[in-house]
Image (cartoon, rainbow, N blue to C red):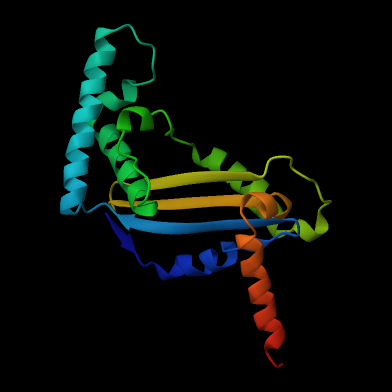
Length: 192
């Protein structure tokens, strides 16, 4: 897997990087990856394939009702492996190699479902000034979408999370807030 520099995504990423919404901050980005595997990727891909096949063999022996039918198809297993490899490149400090458990985390979304979520969250966030302020109890929400194009052999990751600045003061140690204050101080020091 290789990260692809794709200039058209830069403007969207610039917009989604620390989007200030008053009491909350949205952090998001879009990243594109090629599915051409490196040596390390090939080793991990092979071990994941073996792990999935072993898991399928065990689940066929037992009367398990786990949703593994889609993993019997080689193309579905490859898709899962590409997603695990993409996650490994996005978050190198985390081990996503346990595909047996990982397959329960992935599901295919219909475009209409994705568009509805996009419209509901991102479109509203862009027009937050004209909306009433509604507080959300949880300190964070997040989503990750992956788009895999077999023909182009690419995976595009779209991820966003929202941090409450109020909760961030206690939980994140003011890192997000400090960055914003530094940016504001820098702008204040500039002569216009």
